[in-house]
Length: 422
Image (cartoon, rainbow, N blue to C red; front, top):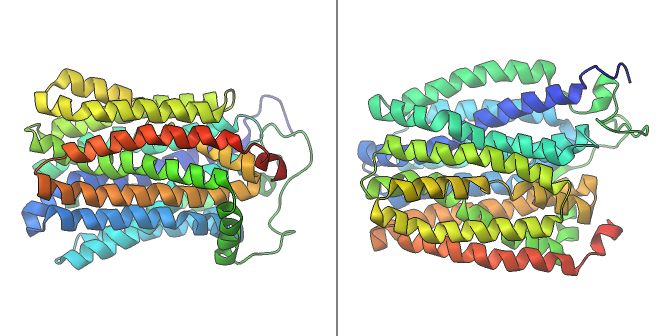
């Protein structure tokens, strides 16, 4: 095992994954900045543009279980390289688009699937493969990369888009992709066994090698695991709660917070800064949640996360109506702390109930529900805006749904025996 002071290679894997997730999350966050410029440049309706981003969110969620199974078949490294190349292709083609159909093709389908490689099950797969100890902390750290992408890139992207063009922002991401692809190809590894190591904290020789396990069809494997999941109450409760999670976060706030702010007279750069401020507290909340998920009942953690998020969303329309920066900053702090905090406890519960290996694919399906919810919110936000000339109804609906989600996560504990059977 080497010297006690030697850094385990798993930590190198974590940081490569973190920066790759950060870049993919940054690309995903461009959508919130693009809505108004696309309206102005192409004269497309907000609901038509929102539909493209709804397709993006839904596709990258639905792709999760297949990506999880694909990682089992061809490995994490190849999937990461292919995903980043798809993101590059999608961005290049989108800079040349002329019709709404090309927005659906690039930002809906290509970038949606490319983001799916990085923002669905990758963090859970890396944490499960490389860590026996501190797995919750590692998962929280990796998931915080999604929030970090928002913190780092959104104000910059908003400024560049306003001063120059949204295409200039994409050129910046193309450069980052060109840097990270060779890093992944050279230094990223699928398993500790590839470096002759045990997972971090492991005390027994249970190194998993791809050579000794037969290759499985990723599509069949994904649906086989789904058939197991749909027969259990915990799967449905976690899926329903995660549908609401996606509806109330990436589908609504990531996509529509900046347009909603503009509707109330708040400059786009200021709105992007508020969203980035949320992301800063999101990083803190997600890492703290990973730490807490190793120590406390994950069901009760989710209960409080959803409940507090619901309350913050119910207050948001008032903050906008009063045009109060104090209330909006308070919302950014309060909401930001539990934006992605729901992920570590949900992954933990999926692994506890369905087993370490099967749990990742189960989480992929649960995350698919998350992104379907996100897609619904992304579209409804734009559609309701055109009907009601504002976002109040959408924000209040999301807040009420979060309160309902607290009931779903508490009911999970009524079937504790499934974790024994996994």
